[in-house]
Length: 570
Image (cartoon, rainbow, N blue to C red; front, side, top):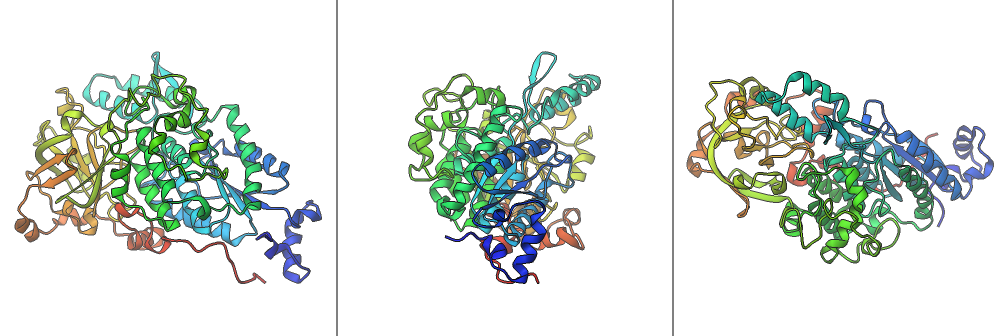
């Protein structure tokens, strides 16, 4: 089969001359004849600190591509740093996917190696690859090494939330909290907890887009560089075999990703990302699939935020393949990977080396810990909760709502000593969905009122149309759909209304008669809290973003356009 890049470089006309001449710059003539052109889509950026080391990873990918006879080409793409960009990195996930897709399609490329790490980078790269459908493979950047403070391991993200609450409770000094800052981030790499970055790297491997056994390799580990070199070689093979995402990513692939998500105790954010990736591929995937396939899967990984250990321990204990071997009977045995072989074929030699970190099926961390999908009068189109990160005594709860109309309203009032709230209250935060914020930020794990922290309260039921960090914990009902800004019932809740939660029954209900609810309208404060951008990406986003239960992609980006470009540039 002729290479796609030959459409640019083949022939002797003026356009072929231009394409070759401007790319030559010391390259031999045979660089443009029969040699696969492999892009290295690199999200390295100083402003995305978790991905800053990917330039080194890219160099090893280049070596592998060269060794296999391909031509490696650096392609810097949009990079989204979770910790820095405002109002939320999620606002630009779709933009990053669209920009990467268009650059892959527009250029003389035959395949691509996708380098990502921080939360939104792997999802956006996979969305792009699915839509352009060139041979593609992911190299995850890997987690950082474990930092310590006062002799205790620190889980980045998780311990930020924990320690900051201790400061507010008066049990940790501000000075000590600030001193822990330099210990939190020990090395290159993304979060070392089972946050969204680690989750998406592992889920991408279970999906089949990463060479089995690579995801979870710590960023400073030389074995990551070895894997990058091997992946560069594999990229050339993918082109020669025409192994594109559409040829191996099936409903079974997503089944395996959902089983893995549950077994590792992964981030709820993976749900919106997997829904969006499936939407680009045309694979039918719904919220109900996550509950049907994953909610009864045992959590086997004892890792923060649901457990004790960190990603360096996870890798040492056997990594993802050891986990999947324990639940192999739940996997689709036909689902392929980028290697051309089924995922299950890679599990034969995957022992657990530390059964404290990775539990056996007979001794799980949580019997049924997968993400649960809730429905009811408060979330007609669904909401999520992560039981493994919640307090067991709150998984069935009935309490009085304390409502906040925006994140600003929340910050202004949550620590007011006169706030009418107690440990049984249900904190409700709205205006934080895809349209309302905009971008669906990680604010659902609301800090608890100071006066309750001082009483020893450490968890409450919280309900929000936004997301929470994968490193966070607590009894949080999130991704409520439709969101308040899209006309969901969440916009009509009033302080004092009773909300009932029953995770076992998969219900989240507002105990207000239907007739009364129908007569209500959103308050002025609620509506004024919704985003109303006038121009640019935010305007486009608000006008076209889908709800959380659909993956929060833009409606006109669902599906794929393939790699064909029919017109010349000159």
